[in-house]
Amino acid sequence: MPEPLKRKKKDGTSYERPPEIEACLKKLETVEVAERLRQFATLSRKSIGHVPSEALVYFLRRAWADGMQGDFEKLFRLLMKRIEQSLCSVISDSRMAGARGIREEIMDRFAERIAKDCKGRTGLLDFYEIRFDKAFAAFRTSALRQIGPSVVDTVPLGTDEDDGLEISAEVEAAAADFLGGDPEKLDDPAFRLELTAAIDCLPDDQKQVIGLLLQGFQIDSKDKNIMTIARILQCDERTVRNRRDRACKALKAILQKENAQ
Image (cartoon, one colour):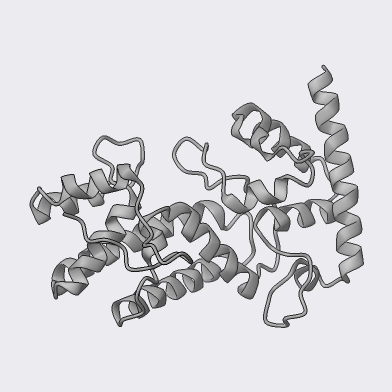
């Protein structure tokens, strides 16, 4: 029986994993360790036998708690390999200057988070057992705001998993600005292709602002430790907002024209 999560909600009840994750954990508990590791090593979500990262985090934490150092190290390497794959798709060398160093910094920070969880920071990784992709997207965005890219060439609309259909949580929020409050349009692959093409038509200064918004950066902040769009582009907040407004107006016009045809 999978161990319950430790973290509590505001009402005092414990967080719970989705039923499909609980079922996956119960199934994995019945197989040998070597077979579990083999399944965890499958990276492609389309592959038969692929195991969700939520389950990998669960068994990683359990291996540490049970003193299974060898298993913990193997699971740790497998998890970090998945994270590296995810980061390479979102923070690619073609999209961002210094991408490799940024990816390595984010991976180091996540490894530190795992270490803190192992050392007794109860519940630090609980949400990763519930919705790993959403939890890691938030972690990545937070790290990027502090690190900050020096250049953004193109705009990643999703996480570029196997079928390219996954949309990052921060993308949905940012997209609402120029989707008329209807970010669900991003669920349509055809619309995402239209949006990508429309963004590519923007002037470079507007394209950079939209690209950074879609990666989760905020326009400005009083906290000097937060990397914002204004700081990355070395201009004031008003300039950033003007570029954003012009870009949103242009995108709406382009998309309306496309849909009218």
